[in-house]
Length: 339
Ligand code: SAM
Ligand code: SF4
Image 1: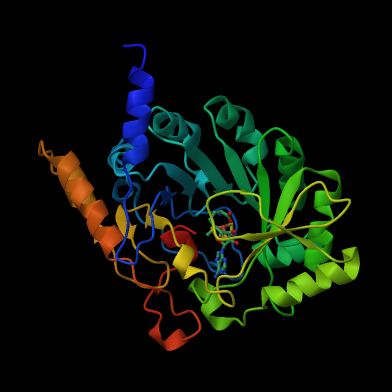
Image 2: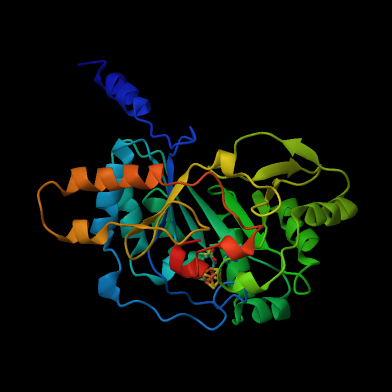
């Protein structure tokens, strides 16, 4: 029996699911709510009509899906939304996922407003890392972008989390709004051990009406301010970010060039929406619904959910078409999909 853990470890390591283009899919982003306490101008400036609570998957239903996903080798989960921390007891879900055999990583993406209030409980249940969205360090600009006067609370959350677990700050640059913010945000990595990342604005949600600032321009601004950067090839997470180092900064600077640096060949993910749809690609409206199966009470639900996960993996397209806006079929907001 002494070698059992190794044996099972090997079995778990062997489970791996690939899509039609030979990409290994091992990561699922899970939206737990479409609600949010902010109104970011590129996401949902006027809010959304929220779906009734009964339409959202329960934490038990989400954990059920994750258990099936883990048996297929999808063993890294990111909790997102909407704003995940506006849903009650988010930490309970994390602890449920933590108990699933074979799960390698559970992380959270938040706007940071409520993170300070929940950090201790989230860390206690084993949150591995946190992404905090922050587009500016200027109070008035923050209010203009998010519709709320919460900058100080977000900065406090960042200071509380930094150094205790891996923290990534995510910034979306909007032309004519916060174009000068990158260098100021990068400066956060001077004193704090945080990665600061720049996500190119995608033509999703209210972002459809906006122009994307290319990450090359962001890098240029950062290098003008901090001097030459150098490539950082160390692994920072599960995503497509490319990292660079700057002498004197505690953290790295990351670039998620979703539009100008098409990284689809490295795609490793599925999305699960808060209403129980599996989404093969952010760009297209196609989904594989799970809720009916989850709620029909039949004994073979586990097998049928696994089949649906496989179907979603096989439905992944070769690439997105963000550069060709007429062909984007997704009409929902990022908060409804799960960004
Ligand atoms: N509310 C949480 C937050 O803001 O981190 C989690 C959900 S939010 C939809 C996840 C991420 O998506 C945020 O970093 C946000 O900036 C980003 N996002 C939303 N709309 C976007 C768009 N059109 N293009 C690029 N990123 C977007
Ligand atoms: Fe809310 Fe995040 Fe969308 Fe901003 S980006 S409105 S914080 S869901």
